[in-house]
Length: 308
Image 1 (spheres, rainbow, N blue to C red):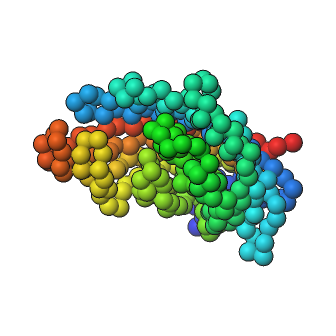
Image 2 (cartoon, rainbow, N blue to C red):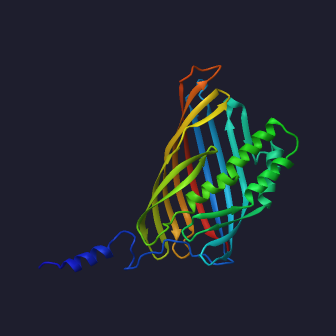
Image 3 (cartoon, helix red, strand yellow):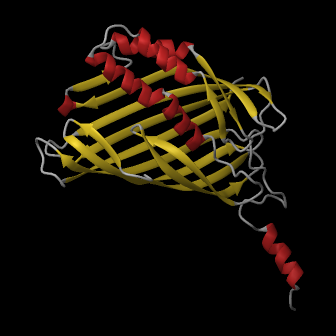
């Protein structure tokens, strides 16, 4: 007995990945004004440089963010009030004689700045797909923090730069785009791509994220993805090695579980691998043209929930 083309096509459609009992899952947020959500991001990063002293740097942050939904507008964008909570930050670079930690008590300046940051709130708007439309208040806080931090010193410069790199506007924007803009602009679809600007070590690079809906149940959606990271241009700067230029490339994987009702992430494990190739242009220590690679591996563990 031959099956008709229409029957075959219907069977194929009903068995597409991501379908559930004949219904396409909604791939967007469904947040309500008055609700609040928590996002906790555990970041562990290690960097290895092939320079003569073979520098090793370990970097760790625990970022807790509370998002309170204030309102929605005519375009269905969400307006949220955001606050950092219970932040942790540490950086260890033995070759540079650098050991920074917000929890050790060794740096009262860093501890005080973290406490000030946790008291502040800032605002943003995002589309139903999670695209960041506007961010207000965080940049102004870091500007005021710099002016109020006290006497100008090397410790102050290191602390401010480290804090800004971990929790400043560019860092927040990067984490938001990576772990909250995970839905397609146009829905429904089972495979989609979101292009973002991601700040890696303060350098803006292009990150092209490709996602696929891997599984859908009544409670949870599973979204998997792969990101390719590339700098659109060479970066030129003056460092302790001299005048250099550098290129950035890498990849990132994603494995999301999200709440089907609200669209909010429940859990994500993400791994990022980045190669920075630095070329000496002019130096008192190294010959021009010398290429020095450094490798950075980062593991993100993300947990999200609704605040009861």
